[in-house]
Image (cartoon, rainbow, N blue to C red; front, side, top):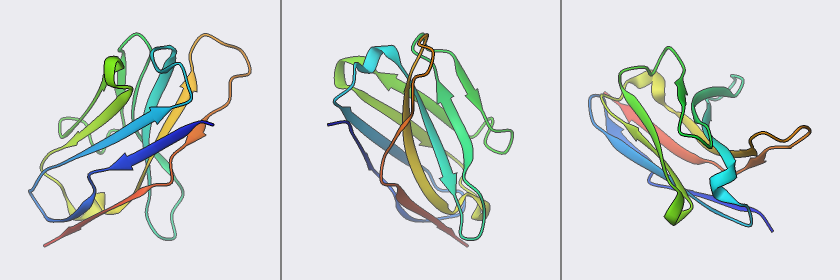
Amino acid sequence: QVQLVESGGGLVQAGDSLRLSCAASGIIFSLNAMGWYRQAPGKQRELVAVISSGGTTNYADSVKGRFTISRDNAKNTVYLQMNNLKLEDTAVYYCNARRDKVLGSRPYWGQGIQVTVSS
């Protein structure tokens, strides 16, 4: 079965940094685009960052310059380095995987991990 397991969340103060990790199994990792999404209470889930199978990255405007997504295909792991965290970054963060270059491919999701930023 496909599994995406997030780790690295927690409670931090504004201005601090965190690195989230997502370990994938049950997929051909190198052929998948990987992404991070987040959802705050009462709000819709939103894209934070995505990295293609070829390494191309895209970010939400709200995190550009602060967050960096990367992948290690040898470890089947995608990371989200979060610097200069702000109160509005508080959310549950979800890992996402989807095959690139395949019509009709469907996404897989992790269970989510809490990130809380306090003042």
